Length: 268
Image (cartoon, rainbow, N blue to C red; front, side, top):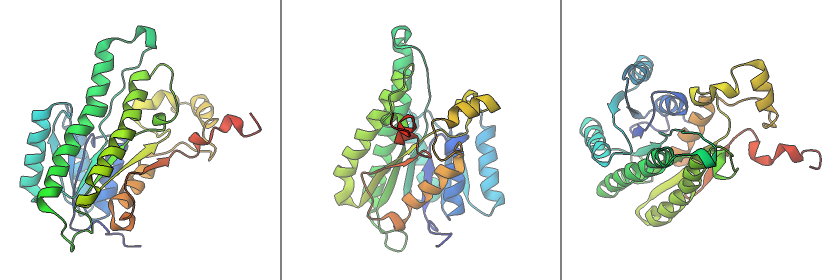
């Protein structure tokens, strides 16, 4: 297998300063892509990701943007294309949670989650697709004009009490992805999703950072371990490559078997 299967390609990963986004940015860089590390707020974590990539011989650039803001998304893409010449890969990863029981959930919580997790994906995918169509296929770089990968969640399938805004956003990502995949396929743009299960990141630290918490979580994961960001990064690197050229409109579930309904292992 070619370890540099993304050589010569340019990628933008939203929410890449930490967690799954960081793992994906590093994996794409290891596969040879130059990577834009999108972040919001404190620049230091994003600068650390850039430094990690550069120290390993790769190319990376940190760009701040709130993905829920159209003007900021457009400026981010302008800066990225100015720096790298074009883009070949977008990984829509930036996401947030504002958890509350349904009866106590506020409109602000609902709107905030949907604006980042769903509207942000729309805004970034639209800018990326416009660049892919403008440039077209460059056979020496990739068989596709461009690749869009949406980071969804097992909660596009599994209901999650107390998180209806988050689950709704992930269910929305599923149909958003499939619809634009259908529409953009004739332009040789591939659009897919990855649906992670439980991954050790800061956003869900309480679910795994003590032995008891991890033991409880493992009851939901048949393979017997909690995932790490590198698990998702390796899937993203494959999905962005020409090895996956015939894959579009698909959600690849990377969850250690969480969606296999382990409570039914012994007949329910």
